[in-house]
Image: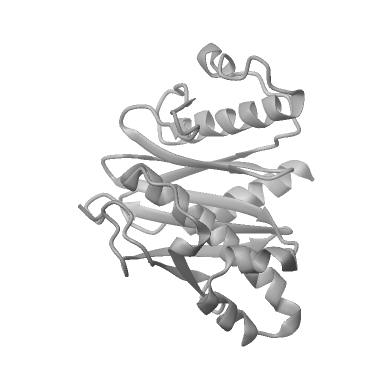
Length: 235
Protein backbone atom coordinates (compact mmCIF):
# COMPACT_ATOMS: atom_id res chain seq x y z
CA UNK A 1 0.00 0.00 0.00
CA UNK A 2 2.82 2.41 0.88
CA UNK A 3 4.64 1.77 -2.41
CA UNK A 4 1.36 2.31 -4.26
CA UNK A 5 0.93 5.65 -2.49
CA UNK A 6 4.48 6.68 -3.44
CA UNK A 7 3.88 5.64 -7.05
CA UNK A 8 0.73 7.75 -7.14
CA UNK A 9 2.57 10.75 -5.68
CA UNK A 10 5.39 10.39 -8.23
CA UNK A 11 2.85 10.20 -11.04
CA UNK A 12 1.04 13.26 -9.71
CA UNK A 13 4.19 15.36 -9.47
CA UNK A 14 5.46 14.09 -12.83
CA UNK A 15 2.30 15.43 -14.42
CA UNK A 16 2.83 18.81 -12.77
CA UNK A 17 6.44 19.27 -13.92
CA UNK A 18 6.03 18.04 -17.51
CA UNK A 19 5.40 21.55 -18.85
CA UNK A 20 7.95 21.99 -21.64
CA UNK A 21 8.61 19.39 -24.37
CA UNK A 22 12.27 18.44 -24.58
CA UNK A 23 13.00 19.80 -21.10
CA UNK A 24 12.58 16.72 -18.90
CA UNK A 25 12.22 16.92 -15.14
CA UNK A 26 12.66 13.69 -13.15
CA UNK A 27 10.71 13.06 -9.96
CA UNK A 28 11.30 10.59 -7.12
CA UNK A 29 9.54 10.06 -3.80
CA UNK A 30 10.74 8.47 -0.55
CA UNK A 31 9.42 8.03 3.00
CA UNK A 32 11.02 10.25 5.68
CA UNK A 33 10.09 7.67 8.33
CA UNK A 34 12.13 4.91 6.66
CA UNK A 35 15.81 4.04 6.94
CA UNK A 36 17.64 4.33 3.60
CA UNK A 37 21.19 3.37 2.71
CA UNK A 38 22.95 5.25 -0.04
CA UNK A 39 23.57 8.77 1.26
CA UNK A 40 27.06 10.01 0.49
CA UNK A 41 29.51 10.52 3.38
CA UNK A 42 29.70 14.23 2.57
CA UNK A 43 25.91 14.45 2.91
CA UNK A 44 25.86 12.55 6.21
CA UNK A 45 28.60 14.84 7.51
CA UNK A 46 26.13 17.74 7.35
CA UNK A 47 23.98 16.13 10.06
CA UNK A 48 26.46 15.02 12.75
CA UNK A 49 24.26 15.88 15.74
CA UNK A 50 20.78 15.73 14.24
CA UNK A 51 18.00 13.94 16.08
CA UNK A 52 16.98 10.64 14.50
CA UNK A 53 13.79 11.92 12.87
CA UNK A 54 15.59 14.86 11.26
CA UNK A 55 18.44 12.62 10.08
CA UNK A 56 16.01 10.19 8.42
CA UNK A 57 14.15 13.06 6.77
CA UNK A 58 17.40 14.52 5.43
CA UNK A 59 18.64 11.15 4.12
CA UNK A 60 15.27 10.34 2.53
CA UNK A 61 15.36 13.65 0.65
CA UNK A 62 18.89 13.03 -0.61
CA UNK A 63 18.05 9.47 -1.67
CA UNK A 64 15.04 10.82 -3.59
CA UNK A 65 17.36 13.34 -5.29
CA UNK A 66 19.81 10.56 -6.23
CA UNK A 67 16.99 8.47 -7.72
CA UNK A 68 15.75 11.44 -9.73
CA UNK A 69 19.26 11.96 -11.14
CA UNK A 70 19.38 8.32 -12.16
CA UNK A 71 16.02 8.71 -13.93
CA UNK A 72 17.71 11.39 -16.05
CA UNK A 73 20.34 8.80 -16.99
CA UNK A 74 22.98 10.33 -14.70
CA UNK A 75 25.03 8.93 -11.86
CA UNK A 76 23.91 9.99 -8.41
CA UNK A 77 25.95 12.81 -6.91
CA UNK A 78 25.90 14.46 -3.48
CA UNK A 79 23.43 17.25 -2.78
CA UNK A 80 24.92 19.40 -0.05
CA UNK A 81 23.51 22.54 1.57
CA UNK A 82 24.54 26.11 0.84
CA UNK A 83 24.92 28.94 3.36
CA UNK A 84 21.18 29.50 3.33
CA UNK A 85 20.65 25.79 4.12
CA UNK A 86 19.02 25.32 0.72
CA UNK A 87 20.11 22.38 -1.46
CA UNK A 88 23.20 23.10 -3.56
CA UNK A 89 22.71 21.05 -6.71
CA UNK A 90 25.66 19.50 -8.55
CA UNK A 91 27.04 21.39 -11.52
CA UNK A 92 24.77 21.06 -14.53
CA UNK A 93 21.66 20.30 -12.49
CA UNK A 94 18.85 22.18 -10.82
CA UNK A 95 16.20 20.82 -8.54
CA UNK A 96 13.88 21.14 -5.59
CA UNK A 97 13.11 19.15 -2.44
CA UNK A 98 10.04 19.07 -0.23
CA UNK A 99 8.73 16.91 2.57
CA UNK A 100 5.99 16.48 5.10
CA UNK A 101 5.61 13.83 7.80
CA UNK A 102 5.02 10.99 5.33
CA UNK A 103 6.53 12.03 2.00
CA UNK A 104 9.81 13.34 0.59
CA UNK A 105 9.78 14.59 -2.99
CA UNK A 106 12.73 15.46 -5.23
CA UNK A 107 12.50 16.98 -8.70
CA UNK A 108 15.68 17.33 -10.78
CA UNK A 109 16.45 18.67 -14.26
CA UNK A 110 19.46 19.62 -16.36
CA UNK A 111 20.19 23.33 -15.89
CA UNK A 112 20.79 23.68 -19.64
CA UNK A 113 17.09 22.92 -20.10
CA UNK A 114 15.46 24.21 -16.91
CA UNK A 115 16.64 27.38 -15.19
CA UNK A 116 14.96 26.63 -11.88
CA UNK A 117 12.06 24.76 -10.37
CA UNK A 118 10.18 24.50 -7.11
CA UNK A 119 7.96 21.80 -5.65
CA UNK A 120 6.03 21.54 -2.42
CA UNK A 121 3.89 18.90 -0.74
CA UNK A 122 1.55 19.51 2.18
CA UNK A 123 -1.16 17.47 3.84
CA UNK A 124 -4.67 18.31 2.73
CA UNK A 125 -5.82 19.60 6.13
CA UNK A 126 -7.15 23.18 6.14
CA UNK A 127 -4.81 26.02 7.00
CA UNK A 128 -5.26 27.04 10.63
CA UNK A 129 -7.55 30.11 10.78
CA UNK A 130 -5.03 32.11 12.80
CA UNK A 131 -2.46 31.68 10.00
CA UNK A 132 -4.62 32.86 7.11
CA UNK A 133 -3.85 36.57 7.64
CA UNK A 134 -0.13 35.78 7.84
CA UNK A 135 0.01 33.63 4.70
CA UNK A 136 -2.59 35.30 2.48
CA UNK A 137 -2.62 38.86 1.15
CA UNK A 138 -5.72 41.04 1.35
CA UNK A 139 -6.52 40.21 -2.28
CA UNK A 140 -6.10 36.48 -1.66
CA UNK A 141 -8.38 36.71 1.38
CA UNK A 142 -10.95 38.58 -0.70
CA UNK A 143 -10.84 35.74 -3.24
CA UNK A 144 -11.20 33.15 -0.47
CA UNK A 145 -14.31 34.97 0.76
CA UNK A 146 -15.96 34.30 -2.62
CA UNK A 147 -15.45 30.54 -2.28
CA UNK A 148 -17.74 28.09 -0.47
CA UNK A 149 -17.15 28.45 3.27
CA UNK A 150 -16.32 24.77 3.75
CA UNK A 151 -13.57 24.99 1.11
CA UNK A 152 -11.81 28.14 2.32
CA UNK A 153 -9.37 26.51 4.74
CA UNK A 154 -8.24 24.00 2.12
CA UNK A 155 -7.85 26.70 -0.51
CA UNK A 156 -5.82 28.81 1.92
CA UNK A 157 -3.56 25.77 2.40
CA UNK A 158 -3.27 25.53 -1.39
CA UNK A 159 -2.14 29.17 -1.53
CA UNK A 160 0.49 28.42 1.12
CA UNK A 161 1.69 25.36 -0.80
CA UNK A 162 1.84 27.33 -4.06
CA UNK A 163 3.87 30.11 -2.42
CA UNK A 164 6.35 27.57 -1.08
CA UNK A 165 6.91 26.22 -4.61
CA UNK A 166 7.26 29.75 -6.01
CA UNK A 167 9.79 30.75 -3.35
CA UNK A 168 11.89 27.64 -3.98
CA UNK A 169 11.82 28.31 -7.73
CA UNK A 170 12.80 31.97 -7.50
CA UNK A 171 15.52 31.67 -4.84
CA UNK A 172 18.27 30.16 -7.05
CA UNK A 173 17.65 33.01 -9.52
CA UNK A 174 17.19 35.97 -7.15
CA UNK A 175 19.09 34.74 -4.06
CA UNK A 176 16.44 36.60 -2.03
CA UNK A 177 14.31 35.38 0.85
CA UNK A 178 10.68 36.43 0.57
CA UNK A 179 7.86 37.11 3.00
CA UNK A 180 4.45 35.64 2.26
CA UNK A 181 3.10 39.03 1.19
CA UNK A 182 5.71 39.35 -1.59
CA UNK A 183 3.69 37.25 -4.04
CA UNK A 184 0.02 37.12 -4.99
CA UNK A 185 -1.23 33.63 -5.87
CA UNK A 186 -4.32 33.27 -8.05
CA UNK A 187 -5.49 29.64 -8.28
CA UNK A 188 -7.74 28.31 -11.03
CA UNK A 189 -9.52 25.44 -9.33
CA UNK A 190 -11.02 24.24 -12.61
CA UNK A 191 -7.72 23.77 -14.47
CA UNK A 192 -5.33 22.94 -11.62
CA UNK A 193 -3.13 25.90 -12.48
CA UNK A 194 -2.10 29.01 -10.57
CA UNK A 195 -0.48 32.33 -11.37
CA UNK A 196 2.00 33.93 -8.97
CA UNK A 197 2.52 37.69 -9.33
CA UNK A 198 5.47 39.41 -7.65
CA UNK A 199 4.35 42.36 -5.53
CA UNK A 200 7.90 43.54 -4.76
CA UNK A 201 11.07 43.71 -6.84
CA UNK A 202 13.00 40.51 -6.13
CA UNK A 203 16.33 40.40 -7.93
CA UNK A 204 15.53 40.04 -11.63
CA UNK A 205 11.85 39.40 -10.87
CA UNK A 206 10.30 42.85 -11.03
CA UNK A 207 6.93 43.93 -9.67
CA UNK A 208 4.11 42.29 -11.68
CA UNK A 209 6.39 39.56 -13.07
CA UNK A 210 4.38 36.34 -13.22
CA UNK A 211 5.29 32.71 -12.74
CA UNK A 212 2.87 29.96 -13.68
CA UNK A 213 2.45 26.79 -11.67
CA UNK A 214 0.33 23.69 -11.40
CA UNK A 215 -1.32 21.94 -8.49
CA UNK A 216 -3.12 18.71 -7.71
CA UNK A 217 -4.84 17.27 -4.66
CA UNK A 218 -4.54 13.49 -4.39
CA UNK A 219 -4.02 10.87 -1.71
CA UNK A 220 -4.64 13.36 1.08
CA UNK A 221 -1.83 15.61 -0.16
CA UNK A 222 -1.60 18.97 -1.91
CA UNK A 223 1.08 18.99 -4.62
CA UNK A 224 2.41 22.18 -6.26
CA UNK A 225 5.12 22.78 -8.84
CA UNK A 226 6.64 25.71 -10.71
CA UNK A 227 9.07 25.13 -13.59
CA UNK A 228 11.09 27.96 -15.17
CA UNK A 229 12.59 26.72 -18.45
CA UNK A 230 15.99 28.02 -19.52
CA UNK A 231 15.65 31.07 -21.72
CA UNK A 232 12.47 32.19 -19.95
CA UNK A 233 14.07 33.52 -16.77
CA UNK A 234 14.27 37.30 -16.29
CA UNK A 235 17.72 38.85 -16.58
